[in-house]
Image (cartoon, rainbow, N blue to C red; front, side, top):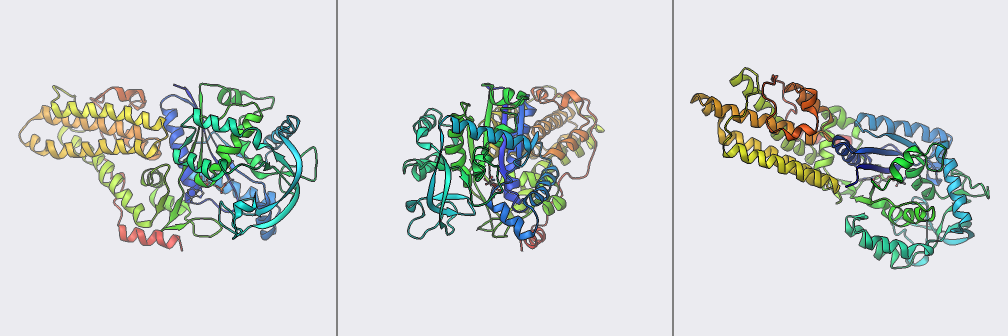
Length: 525
Ligand code: ME8
């Protein structure tokens, strides 16, 4: 099993402010990164912004500022959002940074020298929003972009081409030998059918019609195609081809490091076709996995910055707290499938999982320990069948959670924990502590409290990559020692005897669905 983990988000276009879709992808990566770190994997988590290209240049012109001024402002807003969402990224790369641009120029030179890039002429259909050229067959009779379905226009320019034909067989072999390279597998089939089987044209990798890009040293009429520029961020951020390549050696070059790119379904093609080809051209290893997550829509309509129907995470964080927003994103949608954001689903999800299940369990347990045991966690003595079965379930949950997280199945991993919480709540109903107390069955009553405490702490730990603020609150309620807070301590079932417990206010207040639906709806108008 690999003991290092390098995970990346796409680098987003700062062509408008970040919305809940960007927050979704970044939060899922953050959860995966935090879950690995918690278990002792050496982890590196990268995000950033993709600042070049015609689209950005046009936006800046519309606003009457320089492209650099324009991206500086929005890049800052992305950083502020990730801070507010408690994103634990190790670096934030911007493609206008010198550290990126110089290395990308070197990369282009290398590819040119290797004869993987040549100068030619392009005649085709151009989609400005996607910054992509397409052939007659691809745009069809209606002349629509096969990716975004918007109209394309005829364009001709001298440009450099990358020889995709040289690498396509190797790529397909790689897919076959590594069935998890593209996850979910349906995305691989889509790529084969839509692009590879139809025959790939050489990829145009330079532009002369605008100048907001990385200049090509060998021919300064040209700037680099934004996708070649952007994809390289995954290695330039690590110091590839510099005099300080430590991170690159430590993460990219170490076969014991698992490399995962998480991307939305809109940009699969670039990550699973062209990026592997570029890496092969440079003689570098490929990532282990490209995980393609689904896109979220808003009340059934495609959410996009250009359409203007987007939800900003900021007012949600402000009103409900960061953990609730993170929880909703992680739990509501099955990672890998498309999802629908509706205001009702937000409030309901928080009530069902956090207020009624997790929060309620913590609240009931701390109150009962205060009431029956003067706030001190009792010892587990002579456990009965129920206690033994919860212990077994707890151990099984930890294993299942680890395996599912390792397989990037975040929502499924969280489901396992929610199931354990459900069982713990049922255990209260079945054991009826109030009856045990009345009947003076102190040992049995103590066992229930010990088991509930242990289950709460195990679940809190497993949920800590998502519920970053709540974790500390729960640890404080149970006065955990530093040792008890460690992940390894999950092996000690009922290892909390003698801890002093505080009675706190509810962790997650129940939301009024109608009221909150109205509030969230008002944000999307
Ligand atoms: O494509 N639902 O940047 P981008 C879920 N710069 N995720 C969404 C989403 C939605 N409705 N909308 C966006 C680019 N995303 C390039 C990437 S990488 C080398 C260069 C997320 O700002 C999703 O992860 O258009 C998607 O792939 C990404 O944002 C696209 O961001």
